[in-house]
Length: 527
Image (cartoon, rainbow, N blue to C red):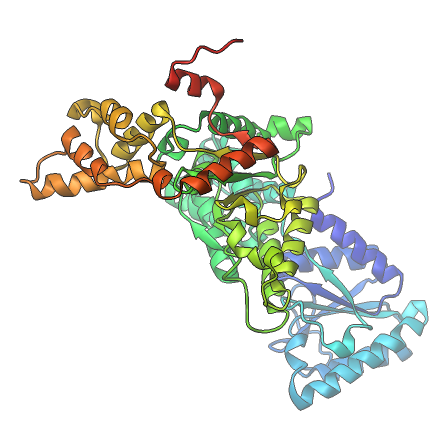
């Protein structure tokens, strides 16, 4: 199977055969990409390939001095021009640091010379054809060169290339360690964990894991992506939520749906052609588990959780907000399999529907998000939360943007018990061994409470118990804490009623199954 890098190298070979004189290759990985470039040049019929940088001047593939020109790019351009005029070989010149010479007064001459070469070289006889490849991490092509260069954005390694890097790391081990380096089921997980890293980063992660534990640890490899996120500064990395979906009380339909979607990432599902899940929108009552569920998905699926704060991406400079948003999309696509969390999305996009005087930034952000969600090809799972559905643009809610739109209501009796029990576990307590009657407290004293209001009872009871002789909390402590709560269902009853009306009108799927509701209320289902 052809990898992305091989396909890109084939494109470059075709561009060279078509006599494109100057190529601008964007990558941070010189060593990996240069190997492909060398093969592309040979395939295009350019046997002489030379490299230039400001440290060693002109060298061959093995780093030997070529005795042509110097550290000054102007002298190298002179050598290129002379060989195109009177040489006897076709050649490609791969220039590594050239983008640094485009600034200031010196840059004017360098840019002009490169533009002249871009115009002259295509007319050179084929037997003396010369081409220039600028290899750079910068995507900023000087305006003067934009009409004279062909830009190629070199991709990160795909799964097949990552697999070859993993196999090479294992092959370098002593024979007695090879068999245990990637136990059954680990290899695919280790490959998936490294997708989104550069080839050098992936090789380094595998080597580090082998040194530390004598085997490939997918979790340790996935953590390396945290550095990629920190470097780009457009997304926020969240550590996994301990307990995963077990830390979320109730919401049985939503959790079952999420567990079922996890199989789409298995090797068998990939071979079957099952599409990757796009994501879901969680709408409902504040404090009832929307954000907690987003954090729990990443833990349950064993993939990174990235939070995209749309408000933080906005900038006072014209055009920079849109640029930040698109950079965030590129990072998400490069990271590969992950959960992208858009919290309270209606607030970030309020200007797109309410006519905010932000110069159209919110409208542009909405358009960019809609286009990306519709056309993206990556494996990121997007989960967005919203409290005020009336502020959401209608086009954001249509089918196709999301796999499902879920409505999360106040917890019923069964769910209140599950939420309180999960909150007790979250504070390193076991309700059974403590003989803590969470069932009676949740059913009799937490009516109309949201999940957050129920969970808050536990730390309140812990404070009271600690102040009273550092004892363990009792059911009475929880009841006392509950009696001091005025639930949101009383203070914002009209707003919650409008949310339920919207759910019935628009058909958003309830996160709690009818069976759970019936069990909680004692109603017999007529099936």
